[in-house]
Image 1 (cartoon, rainbow, N blue to C red):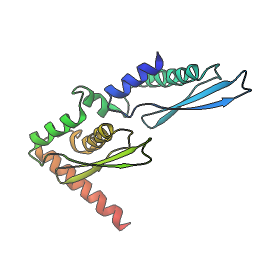
Image 2: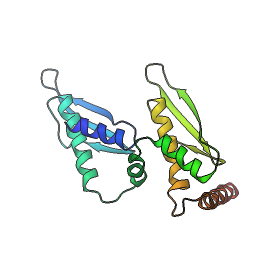
Image 3: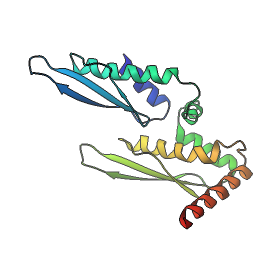
Length: 181
């Protein structure tokens, strides 16, 4: 049940789906499993060895859910705001239209072997380019890019065109400053 809940949380929050890894140890007739799950850039481990792979993955997912539920307001504020619209890309497009800037343009690249593709995406909006976290699907990569664009540009206290222009100026200053150093 915990694996399902963690996957639902990922989908509702515009995060990449959880990725599980497992360690097997012991003889063939009595194997023991320990699992880790990577979720939103964090790794959570099952606390004990389990008798089956499935139990170990569920234990790791349960640790992730328990840890996330104990946290107060977190870095995933943007995801919660975007969750209200249920579609990151639509949300970004609406904000661009309201701000009177160019609409988002997505550019997605596929890499990796055919059976295990990795998609990366950049989105250009309002004269700026944002890169999202890599994902297993094109759709998720585009959502990740939309979220990357939403953080600096739209979650500022002033979401007007003037606020966007101030944000753009500040980002350009930071980019220029990092080139000088």
